[in-house]
Image 1 (cartoon, helix red, strand yellow):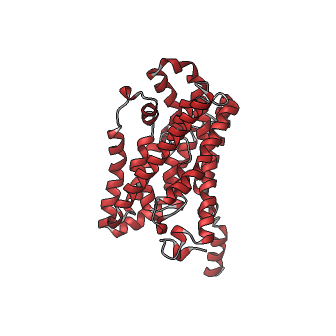
Image 2: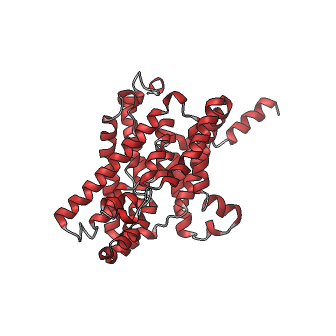
Image 3: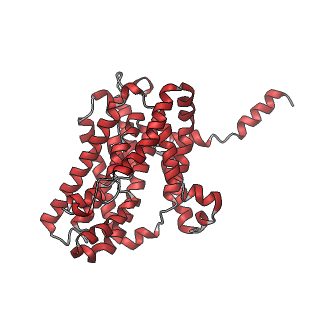
Length: 342
């Protein structure tokens, strides 16, 4: 057998799975997410066998996100440091304002009981809070380092802080400065190292898709299909409404960006984070009159997080494809992806 024949057979055996996933809109997020949720639903103990399996696939989200932030920080050019800050402030602001406006509107029209069993404070909790892990995963495929860098500010909506502020319960809340610092440190490490070492930046660029894949598995491993059944129709409706806000965020965010920077990442904050399920308990503690709604609110937020987790990547991919097709924003001749626009 000749050497060329052996090489050809070896190439035929290569399934090229990673590149095939990249070709699917949001594939590096959706595929591992579906795999993890199915395993967690039908084989609930699979991720809990201990050792490296549990450490990587179940408890690994925080560590993987930290590594991902180092990778993303390495890609930030020192001349572009102002844009991540601007994007972060803008995304956080429009996310907060729309969530509060939506909650107040529901309260004004439907009262304390809310709409279809979804109370005003649940709307605020679900819409002002976004899935940071999903956002940075999507930024690796549809944005650039300045979009990923925005997470250092966007992470401020992680948890009950903004919900409590919106409800006038700021006496029990404090600005999570340490959480912000904890997000900034890995970004800063990658930023400094990437700007003084081109080979490190190159290595990080190659590793990013792999980190995205395994990070998303650790997100999905904590999610179970049965959660949707527990919350029922109200949780699904909340999730659909939260996901629909992605359309608003896409247009508003792009209006506030320079034309050459416009992309689909505004839609990437049309999510509800799983940790929003912890917000109702904090709200109930701040205002005991809302305690009767806590159990259903918790299930509703958890369900909304699952719904948006699956829908948001498709919305982002749709807008990205639209912009690519019409050569808008980053796909315009002036945009950083203009040369690769199809």
